[in-house]
Amino acid sequence: MELVVFLLLLLQMFGSADSRCFCQVTGDLDDCTCDVETIDSFNNDQLFPKLQTLLESDYFRFYKVNLNKPCPFWTANSHCGLRDCAVMPCSPNEVPEGIRSPSHNKYSAEANEQLDDCEQAKHLGAVDVSLSEETREALLNWSKHDDEAERFCVVDDEESPDSQYVDLLLNPERYTGYKGPEAWQIWNSIYEENCFKPYTVKRPLYPNPFQSGSGGEAKTFYSWLEGQCVEKRAFYRLISGLHSSINIHLSARYLLDDSWFQKKWGHNVSEFRQRFDSELTAGEGPKRLRNLYFVYLIELRALAKALPVFQQPSFQLYTGRPEEDRKHKELLLDILELARSFPLHFDETSLFAGDEKEAAKLKEDVRLAFLNISRIMDCVGCFKCRLWGKLQTQGLGTSLKILFSERQIEALPTSSEQRPSFQLSRQEIVSLLNAFGRISTSVRELKNFRSLLAEER
Ligand SMILES: *[C@@H]1O[C@H](CO)[C@@H](O)[C@H](O)[C@H]1NC(C)=O
Ligand SMILES: *[C@@H]1O[C@H](CO)[C@@H](O)[C@H](O)[C@H]1NC(C)=O
Ligand SMILES: *[C@@H]1O[C@H](CO)[C@@H](O)[C@H](O)[C@H]1NC(C)=O
Image (cartoon, rainbow, N blue to C red; front, side, top):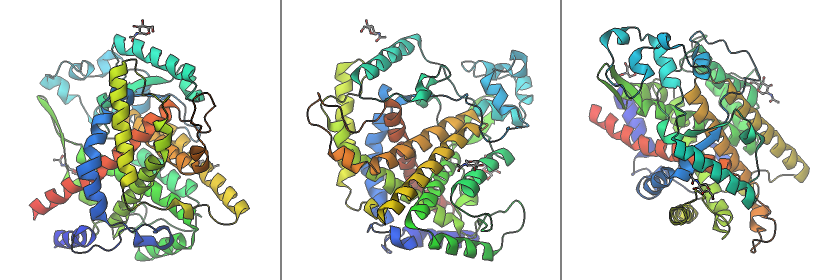
């Protein structure tokens, strides 16, 4: 019964018969005339495959990040010792042999028994920072190039000795076993303390860990949200969309089988339903999915707008292999042109468009809140989650930076002698494209879940 209702809702939401404007869910912001089908086919058939190829290139797979910053807001006390374990490797006898040496894929049955949940979470959440000697050397050369080319502003964090390169392909975003109160605290502080929401307005939570949720809560919340200005509403939807994307990844790369002879990752439909089924979430799920499409449109818009930055002849995706670098730049431009060709763009000119002084203040508020959220990422106990959290907030932040720098981008000089009026660092470029890659993958995964749900029927 439940399933039928859910499928009906899905059909209502995604069915091709119903091509109502998907974005028209919350009023003002919905100046775009887009529907889900257009986004789906644009993403799944055209953009996603190209983006996937690009993100596998060396330029985009190595992301420099500082995973060792202390949490600035609270002392994290993880029962599991997740954090300690990944900063300072566990002493060898703490970790079963099979896990210590990843090349060793036959775990002894005995070792496997020691693998309680906590150990499992440590292992799954750890970041693999191994790079070949050759790569390490090449990366040194790249950053020299970046500095000399003056194309990239140096972000403090990149210079910190604690920052290190991480190979994103070795560390896919997937289920890590990181959940429970600590993970909950992260999202809670983002929503409660950084989304302009007064404490008196309660967020609808299903299932609510503290009390049984009442319909009234949701009503109060959404009428509060409706009363907010476009910018703050957009901010909330971006965060919610990001949250959805992360949850889709965890459900799509769930650790299904963890036996001694294999680890199998794949779709867990029941996990997906728990997070997005309209019935199981009292109607919240479909809203969360809509917000995913909202982030998609915002980031897509930013990519389209950034095209001139990457078109500059002096811009290179430098890895020191000219032939490959040229090929990848072509592919990147191809992707950005494709983004630009998307007909139903979100119109960001309605943002920060009010009274000039008020708009500037609002923009600053949004910027600060966003900055704060990126600092909260340092409180994420699971290192793999922290890695992807930082990358995705930085990517989204870079998108916003682009969207609100339209004039500077238009004013880019045509000759390379002049100092460019707008620049992106390598770290920003890598995070921008990889963050969008996550959202694009989530949109693609929704299609997979839809067919899995149809099979279940
Ligand atoms: C780094 O650059 C130097 C000089 O340009 C070159 O000789 C060396 O082969 C480069 N190393 C790598 C690993 O690309
Ligand atoms: C930043 O986030 C923390 C943790 O949620 C919160 O306590 C603090 O008030 C926020 N600061 C600002 C300036 O928003
Ligand atoms: C799928 O996720 C649920 C939790 O939502 C879990 O109880 C179940 O064991 C998972 N299924 C598999 C095959 O791992």
